Image (cartoon, rainbow, N blue to C red; front, side):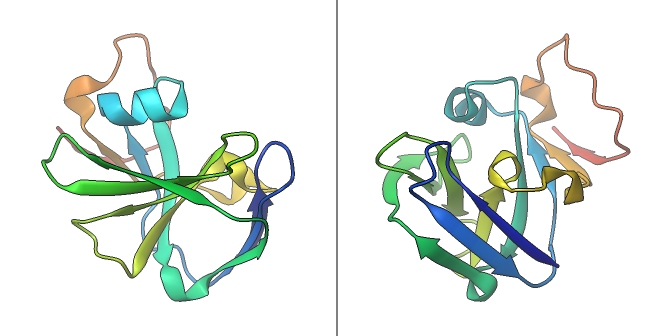
Length: 132
């Protein structure tokens, strides 16, 4: 799979070449806050295939609901979230935020996590593996 994407203002551009490992929807409160929406949709990929083509990313480290750290990287100009790295997955796996892709339709979510925090009005039609 070859994908490109970037932030809202265009200062950050990236490319990815390789397979998608997982395509999660996360309903945790941290992802709700980070996305400014009801959930986060991302693509887990090997870091080796991810390339920052232009701009720079800033990173904010926080402790997630799991008690482990998560590094959330974003454009320092417009604030768009681009990627995150999860302690539980290790530094060699990057999660690309699906909405930043030039063609987000290539994403087909296959797992939902933290479903216990899923908002009652959210309805996901994709057939996904679910984890509370």
